[in-house]
Image (cartoon, rainbow over all chains, first blue to last red):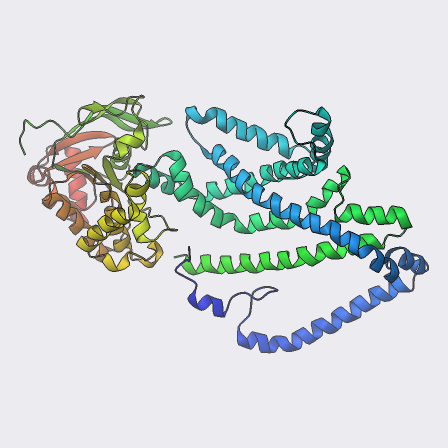
Length: 290
Length: 252
């Protein structure tokens, strides 16, 4: 659904690192940028000098920043990280859908829907009250141990399930904030046209609600992208676990640095993109506002 | 219109309070088929609440609302089904900002009345042409003037082919020069014989279009009658006062 506003905003949309400024400010800013670069180099140089000349640095370098161990550990850490990426993608899709259903259940009104509403509230309160790592441990080790017939016994399955459940509770609250932000008159207007509560939510309230909370949803994406690594406690061989195994074998921590770099490689661009999107969205809204 | 016709809508002793504040107290009103009734009265007199009660958007505390001989305020009646037979237009337009004009209009025909997309579109275009809005079909509401938005809101309500239309101060949020285009739409509906309940501050319009004018004061219909009577020789002191203020403000 392309909004009616955008045309000349694309030309002057926000830059990758924040709002793009008008030309004059940009030209004046060229000198400012030079100053910024120099001061950064000086500051970083000093910090680096302080670290590199410290007494313990040679030992730390051997343990954490060994070129040899980086090359050695990288393939297995990367293989594990690829599992992190896939878990993230799968979990995110499930969370976006599941959380929306919970939020809609919570938004239903009238005494007839009380049980559904109560269930949604109970789910959100309970799940948000449990540390995510505990939920992963409980489901990941607990459910397979029950050996129920027909129930998957894979730790990976239950690890992802725990992530989906936990994040859905938080994401449902994000959606709820969005639903609450749509003015009551929209609901009234939809109902007056004969739409049922659920139709009004689906066609009128939720589409507007989602637009209002996209930045908050994206923020959740960034967070999940790292939290998938928590399933390592179940012994699942994802990126962090692979680094841990390398460490156990060689007593060298460079594998952790390799894993850190891989996570940064994904999460920093996602964070930048989120910022860029949020800024563009904000401008669009301002352009529309009366 | 024959006096013997069964009422289209009837309010019997309808009362409504928000917390402790009584907004409607014992409203009795009969609306015959094809009748246009204007509700006048100062802000807070209960006009808007009355219309929202008729549309079942608000629950009433006492009395009955009867549509086509059926008590629609009884608990076993499905309000969604009742609303399918009537349209309401609000003061603030309340168009759906994320949908084109055409989608705003066809949403209910498609989702509630089960019309196919092409049927609903064709019917919507007919209505848009009739009200001079055909070139706005693909626009989004925020690109339209207030008057255009309100006309779209009327078309949206008409698209479900209601037999009763409720208008809730539909010109109060408009710039003065845009008021006429919206009132003309209602006038046209009157010539077609639409049954209408119209809350309005436009006294000139009420005098032209209404078969009957009801003066609401503090949640009661204090006085009602043909516009000629109400506007020229009101009986109640409160009505006289209200109309005098309108005249003083140069609005009648």
